[in-house]
Image (tube, rainbow over all chains, first blue to last red; front, side, top):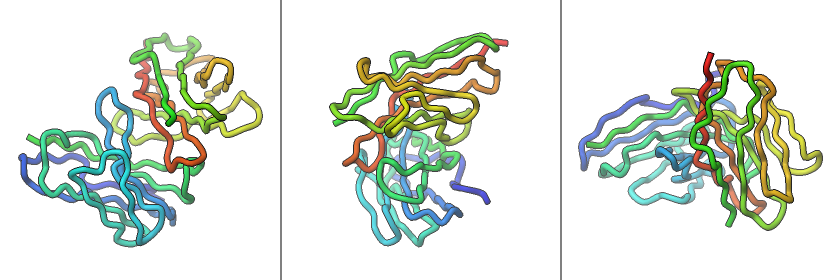
Length: 114
Length: 113
């Protein structure tokens, strides 16, 4: 039982390049989330998926797109990377929806945009 | 909308000493309150949560937190810190209508041997 896995662990991009961050969970959870973590700012929600087939914007969605490929997988795409997107990205999942649901986090992807 | 403040950016304690990390929130009704821990290079892990009932909440790894409505606080405590407790700690607050909690900026705990 691996929990929540994320690939890649590290990535360096040049401004304007695109990439997809992958996330998978093996806990049969319904809800999945993408966050970014910047120094001194805590976690901010980019997008979430309450259930397979649905996605919704979070606090900071601009410059990102997501795909809930199936119940296990939730990917985050940067179409044209910008230096402001340098951050650590975390994927999370929860069995239920709403603020009371316990979220389980992956180890993160560290992204540097030059 | 709710907000959460962690006034201390860094806290340094000696191994074996007691620990208290502060968290204050702004919300009118009774909020949902959480503490998460992030070890170096890892994702966040839930330590404990408060929704209702007994205001003293026990969590994993020997941590506890107390909800004080009069002070709008939810401070995290541990009686004796171990070197492995060195990590980043995040307080989070949510309300019934929100989808996820709002996270504080985090407090970095440094443990001296």
